[in-house]
Image: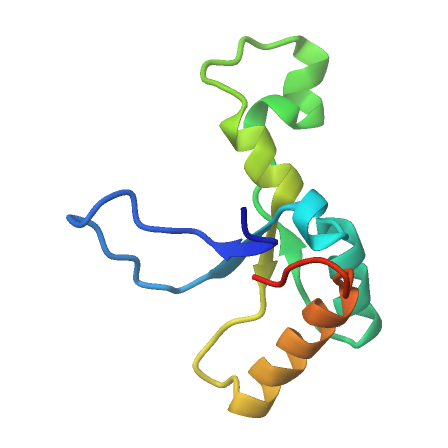
Length: 113
């Protein structure tokens, strides 16, 4: 299992437009978690955020005890996923800076992605 992975296409018929750069962090393999990485980026004035919070976890729906359809996949994506900065204005140096900070958060004794 990879410590950090990018979301993949569901099959060969689909191709992402890559407008949003997201990663999944396997905390066991990485030796860190989404929040640690997010806070490290924030400390360097780099904006990132968790993947979208599932509707059934939103306070208003949780309070109403609204029915939820589906499995736990969305919760796992929310808990382990991170949206990284992206855009056409990012330079190679910007990208390398983000990668350096993410990599620093990882346990050096564990496998990198």
